[in-house]
Length: 352
Image 1 (spheres, rainbow, N blue to C red):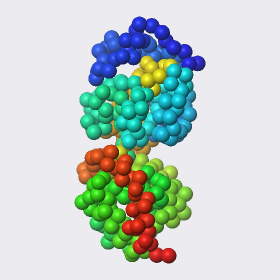
Image 2 (image 1 turned 135 degrees about the vertical axis):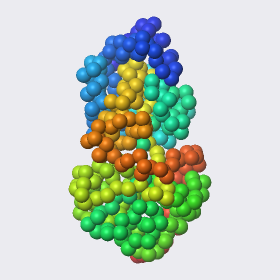
Image 3 (image 1 turned 30 degrees about the horizontal axis):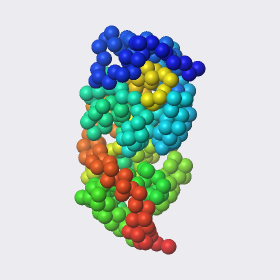
Image 4 (image 1 turned 180 degrees about the horizontal axis):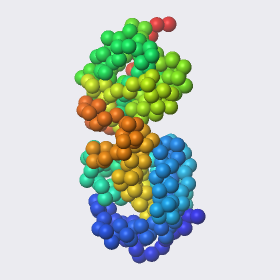
């Protein structure tokens, strides 16, 4: 199952980090990947971001078999480190903040797919160690059966009469990024979270802040009037429950965009199959597969999506004021203190 394809060709391909392959080199990569015949992933299950279609495509097109073990970003990197030359994983999918962590730990194998130039600079490592394949942007999901004056901005949200549901800021990345998105809209940033904390403090004081988890079950029951969620979650929930009952919007006065990146295991037994998997993920077909799973492709502006897939996503215009995290290191540090700051600035105002 975990055979090494030992040849000069494979060794050459493993060392390749150029931004685009010539036709003959791409053919060589496909040949080497087919010879390995297998790719083992972590954190890339069939049900997440429609990975299922990409794995099926790699099997049908190249005869590459696949298996996945689902785990968190931190667990994936820890697995790469612990197993080293006895690696059982070839490729993983981790949150944006974990790409640089994997590089620092020395467990990544660089590979730049042929569409590299269409990936924004903020969303990739210059050496090809990681690159976001799809993004998540903080959005509002609105239950139209309960909310008639739909908010399209954080300013609108503050003026409303309905409850605003964010979830548990101390444990959920989605909720923490919701605070950061509001912070941006209120003039703050990763180093200064005060404007966002003050914003939610006002909502709490007005008795309008709900700490219910904005997941599909609570939405379906009507326990969420307006929820703060990743866009891919909101769109998925909308379609699963009732497309006509919910609207999903990106706040026009500011939001945060993050995402997920593949990391190829430097110690993996099937390095060329892993590279070919990344190549396919960044191809038009691979990007459309992600969009089918409500994940916004990183190359969205360069794609022509089929109408049925396009209907699953929000139009590009919705993202006009959505920003990537400008200082990931500052956010990583401040995110650690956010639970305490949330207690001191928001929960203190929450009615008992």
